[in-house]
Structure formats: C-alpha cells, structure tokens
Image (cartoon, rainbow over all chains, first blue to last red; front, side, top):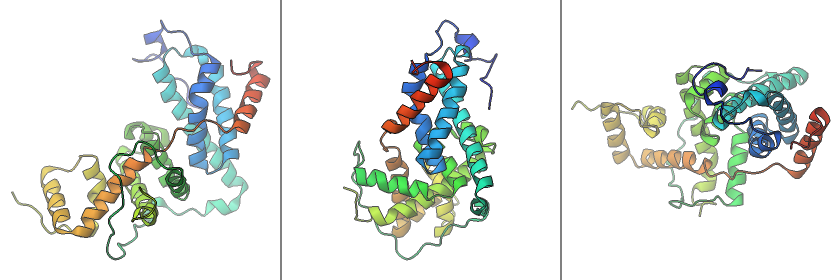
Length: 200
Length: 85
C-alpha cells in the first residue's frame, strides 16, 4: 500500500492547522466513491465490497496523519487503485480462465464499417435517463481491463493523466493512447443506442 | 500554409483524442478541420466521440447499496469499535 505522502508542499505538515478527518467523514464522503471505482474496475459488487473494506481500514488507521481533504482524496484514489489491481491479480490467480487476456497494445481498432450515422443527442441535458446510464455502465464493464482502468479513472472519475500514469505505473503518453482507444471502443459500443435510439 | 489535405479517415481517427484535448499542432488541426468539413462520416464520427466523452461525465454519483453499507459499517465496528463515527 502506498504510504501517505510526507514532507512536501500540500502535505499534512504544510496544512497542519486543520484537524484530521473523522472516520464518519471518510465513510460518508469517500466510501461510495471507493466502492464505485472498484466496482467499475473489477466488474462486480462483491469484489468491490472487499476492496472498499480493505481501503477504509487502511485509511482510518492512518487518519491522524491527514490534515487536508484534497490530499486525502488523492491518496485514497491511489490506495483504491492499488487494492483493486491486487484484488484482480489474486482473483486471476484463483481463476485460470482470466489469465488469457489480450495485450491491449495489439488490440486493433475495428475498421470503419460503412457509413457513420449521426447520433441523436440533445445539447445539454444535466441528468442521464436511467436507461442511458445502464447502457453506459454495461459498455464500461465490457471494456478489456487495461482500457477500463484508464477509462474509469480518466473519464468517469476525472483524474488528470499524470496522476493516472503514476497510479498505474505507466507513462503519460501510454495513458493517453489507452484512453483514446477506450473512448473509441465506448463510442462504438454506444453507437447503436444513440443512433436515433435512446438519446432524447 | 502547407496543409496536408490527404489525411485519411483512419489517420483522422487516431488524432481525435488529441483534437478533443486541444493538443493538435496548427497544421494537423487545419488538416483535421478540413477533413471533417469534407467528409460527412468523419464529421459525424468526431461528433459522436465528443458526445461519448461528455455523456459519461453525467453518470449519476450513486451511494452505497444498503447491504454493502451495513457490511462495511459492521466491519469498521469490529476493527475499531466504531460505527464509522
């Protein structure tokens, strides 16, 4: 597990006037986010629950080292990603069928298949219809792991590419390349639903 | 300006991410814009890529499923003697 950062600008010592967050605050503010990142990365609720519990226990044990919400948030993301990756590895070791995953760098984009239809999109709806949200979640779940990890952290969670690169031990250009391919896959997966379909 | 007007549809698809993030240099940006002006399919494709990025950001922020919340609170109570609070 990554240690909380120390002795650098923006760390607890630099903003030590603030009290440490309480366990209840961490639970209320972060448990849902931890759970949903893990669920999207791992593809099921049971594994996400294990990861969330693991992360919460780690974080609450070290709460007195934190004084700032933003620093805690960054660290929580990192711990969550590490815990989810470790959980997936353990699961793969148990279930041999998961080991035959394709190398993401050789997964080619599908060739354009005929004319592209214009999507039926409304300009700026604030909230997605439940059916749309479900379609998007399903498309995310069907992304191969290496694409899904980057995609969830970048486009769903909105983390900067540099942070994602550090968390996944990749270069920033590799993150960008994988994100682009994930977006193309998402675009292709959503196309049948938005080409005059469920979008309002 | 020497614009590469021969950007193929495949080449354009490789550049959509950089275009979306505003990271294309001047010449590539010009070629990109020119291509989608002349190629309806690629224009629609770029539009749908942009919409894909946008729509995912609107996924609702869900809470914990009630059974998950109960299990997690029980675990915290067991480890720390607290109900997370």
